[in-house]
Length: 174
Picture (cartoon, rainbow, N blue to C red):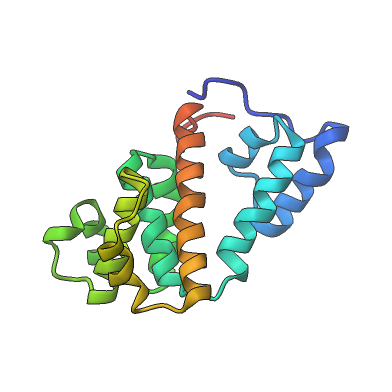
């Protein structure tokens, strides 16, 4: 159960942003019902995460792979639940999704994917990224893609930390 109540979307200060969320996301998920407790935060969050998920050139399979990995590292089950079907639609195999818990021992990832996962783990667990880990991933991506990859990992660390601090879960009644 979430630590604070989910917001009611039909109040005057929340209605416009709630309608935009529904237009852009298809529904008002638990995450956004929580974010709507602050309409300005919900609006900024939607704009930022829409840029990450829909406006970047980073390939969808790479994007969803790091989102799922961040969720697993941070124990954010809601985030993983929401993104598993997207990851499969974007081209990850079920074997890859299943192996994200312990990717280092898996054989189903390419060299580029393994470099990305090492970068993701380092950013998530240690924050500072040593040159060797950065260089191993940077050889696969141009500057724009490196910014997008880094921003995606950072953004979804923000998402998982928000979800877990407020205990937002898929099974919540709202």
